[in-house]
Length: 453
Ligand code: UD1
Ligand code: CA
Image (cartoon, rainbow, N blue to C red; front, top):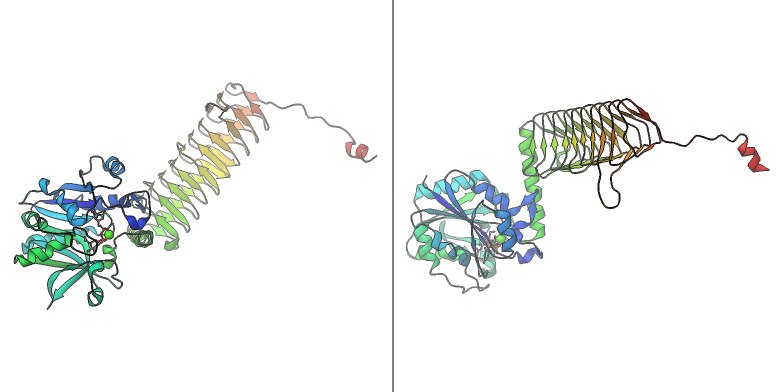
């Protein structure tokens, strides 16, 4: 296959989104729409990618980085006008693949077929179409005796044309020279006063050029995101595809419709995802982990065999065979070693907790380092913040901390030390010492009776 240049249209404001955010930056299954399209064009046969930006260009520019060449369309005068902006960069002898930044569900294999058909037939242009039960909003494919005659936009269509169910997906292949030639001839004489890319087909046909149609058998691929209802529909479809993909890869999902897995997530074999669970961002879950029910993980690494239930974790690493929850909250910078237990109503932030340590109940551990096989009693708190700065608590291996202890950081506790329950520890404790900080208990005999007099 000869080389393709991919051109992604992403300059439009996305007026129908009613948003400050450029349309292609709205997220779908955890990443912006534009990233879904970029993923599809990162494939053999496509050796150059150009993205056309306009509305919200600074944000897009920064987001796209080195992944694509970027061309600015100063004023958004239509899809044809957008493609005109890249003509100076286009080699007449190459093939051009045009895609919309707002069409994220296109399948890689469909794109592959489209490119192959285009090259095999040697046509000037090949249009990807789909048959939709409800085609409203899309350009319709005009045919006579089953021969392609052009594309009519919804706003320019008459009642009969609106009844046509075969639609233009907005994805095409062009011969470079033919595209250049036809684009110079389009005009904005239509209901929207725009330069329509879809008008090039009329022009090419009138010059006797050959145009192919390739109709995908999955209309969901064609879904263009113009408003938030379509964004939600697309997300439903994509989440469903992702769940099916991972189930086929050996993941058990209990009650699949209640489990949401983002596009970038990676799951190992024999992972179990229980109901009402969201796996977000670039989370990675290794073999045999059992996650949920009712758990949200964002950008986490969950190592082999860990179990997490009814909990929330963000930017955290959960080690092999850890037990987390119910009702734990792991915040950014939490790193749990092997077989750590984090129990109910425990919050951990920016802390390293080594192998075999247990924080089973009602604790806050922040900016801390806990060694191996430490036992933290119920209700223990690290007081890491003095109102201005955060300070560190260090607790070495095999320390036993009695319940309801406060560690006023910065403070260090040596190996195998024991902390008496109810202590507020403000000074470092040496290895193997007992530290206890509590006033003497007083007993007032017969106090209850004396009150009654
Ligand atoms: C377009 C097609 C329609 C097709 C539909 C598929 C035209 C005239 N119509 O309509 O036939 O059925 O897509 O989804 O092409 N854009 C720019 N610059 C502009 C205008 C748009 O870059 O000046 C970009 C948008 O950001 C968007 C894409 O082009 O990513 C499509 O534009 P949009 O306005 O959504 O076109 P539709 O009305 O959906
Ligand atoms: Ca669109």
